[in-house]
Length: 332
View 1: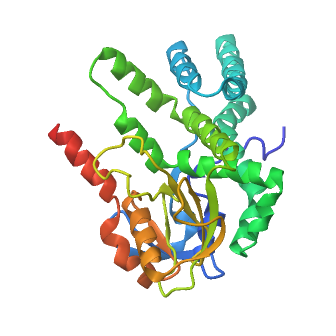
View 2 (view 1 turned 90 degrees about the vertical axis):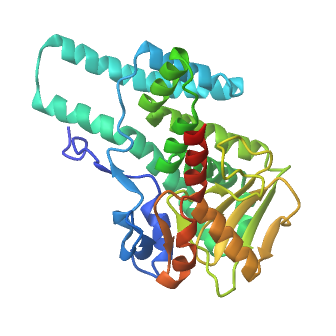
């Protein structure tokens, strides 16, 4: 077995570092807000990442039952796809269980098991990133026609779905929103937290497929920003910026404007109404301010820009939605 196969990836980015580098002005250094509310200028490697964030955990029958129950809410073909992925993970889990039961201890086997747990999901996300890279580069260059290619659209929507579900912000919000009114609800919420590494990938698959399937009904628009207020991004790079999104509850919104900044100048938005026309739309300064503020309100810690001046006006908005929702929850 090669040395590389035995190497466990420890630092897991829940927002792609190469994506964040678009705010680096040709470098890997970006301006961002820190946990203590200060401004920093450092490598993208330092932000939107946690050690072992995607490391797999052992799934019991109870965890599997919760996963299957949530998966059944998807169309049957997606449920089957979820179960196929789950089966692969469970087979690897079973192989480890057989090894443990044997009583044999082998250093190379131990390293391989640890690397497998650390790398499997991280590698899956890396494969989606790699497939989406040509599309993102074309969109950053204002070439929205790249999505006329069906395969490019499939890959981009799958990537897009995971940009929503794979983050720490989405995880914490989803788990916090789970009811805990009785023993059954507590068990389900605990199971979701334990199995989140799989659920987040499963949800990303479902979101991505839903966006692809609905592509002819929704409006897919490339926003071009030539104003003095550049687009910023955050530790939750895709957010719903529709005005119906509640700042006090984590309820499912009635409308969706899924907004994804691609660079300080270009962003992608998927709308279920007529605010933007399909294709390319040039926006004004007030729209740039609005989008930045709504993105910051749904960030957890980091907003990221190409200058400190670009992010400074939006620091006060960071986490506003989560703070208000938590305050309401505590009062209840």
